Image 1: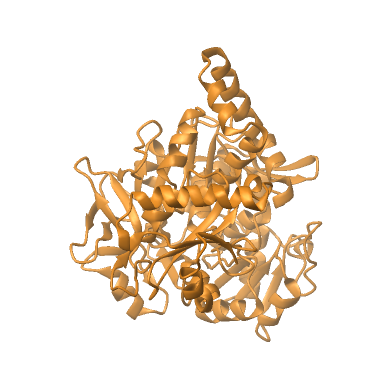
Image 2: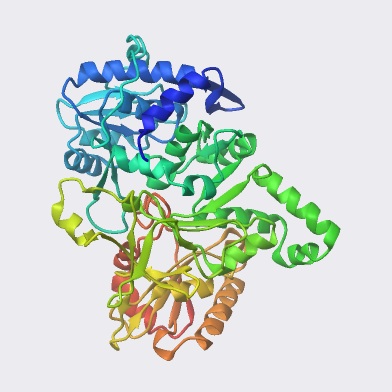
Length: 553
């Protein structure tokens, strides 16, 4: 029976683990730690301040910050106050901030570690109530709002107030690859169901008896990292935060997490870092020598900071079969997770050692999964599915139909019940010849080439598909002619295996990478195919008809 809210678990550990470490924040070479009791005291003081600022029930409070200890304290305080948490990305422009503040009916904003503050602050409506976290070196100074130290002078909220199960817990805006952000909202019973579902133990390998350490670095307002937060509160685990992108590797090594979640792009970065020190050929040779094999695997895990990890998870975007197999050779069997904001991150999972290279696992226990016969869309029935999109009944009706969550992803299910994703339903495009192209299948075939870091297949309305790539560090270090030959060899090899109408006509080497800043990646580092298409649309036909197989943008 689901009868315990998320904040009730916090109260439990605030008492039972009062003097045990909870939140670890890095400052250069040193770390500061808050115990469960200390975090609770600060959350209770913030809750008192929030209730004074917003006397109405169920006020909507936004947190706009990169990951830090105050983020979690604020989220806990919002629950204590009986309010609704509506977090936003820390890199929003002023226009984007104004849009989500309006969409989310925000009553108060807490700002912390943000990026372009001068632009962002232009999106704050006149009269909006604002609080701010302590300043972190290397981040813009927030020059408006109530200081953290002032908020911490409030008296701690007394008692252990518990929200009703039907109260809204949070509105989580989707990162999305296209269109206006949609706010998936979840009531307290939904998050309670998610954290008490059996998969939280067998998938995450979590329990209350053993010590667990999490490492928080993906945006906390995204469902993937939000799951890390809520599971930490549910099981009483420690969380360490990243200080900055520059200190990521150091912070990870210091933390030595027992559970580590990363998107495929991060695993690719790790892989490229390894290959920059040990070329693939030499690595293959060393791994064939039994004694050296064991030493190399142990050394590489320690170099990454993963020697204590009981489980390493890849999720939030598909990983290629080639890369999954590559990590297995290094002794790191990844557990793969598939879900989305609307499903609270749940869907399918592939346990450690049970992952098929070309599949992403089976549906969680008690879930129903099927493929729509007309569109090949993946559909789920699951208990923690969102209540709907906030203030958007039309989009809700499109996504939740007859009890089924329509994911927008296309896929297949094999006879064992294992799911394979073949792409986004809307990613499929039609060429000039009237043929439909499923881009991810072709992109996956290019992935073994370590000279390529990013790629995106285009070709809407073109005679043949065109592949846009950005080279990896090793690829960029090669002479241009050598890089071109490497990519051309891959293209010709892949084309031999493809039907004629799907063959790549040209590979275009981009001058700049796909980033969140230039709008070509989502905050969770998925390629925005529509935006890449828009960037190159005017040149696609010329690229397609170019006499060379590999050209530079």
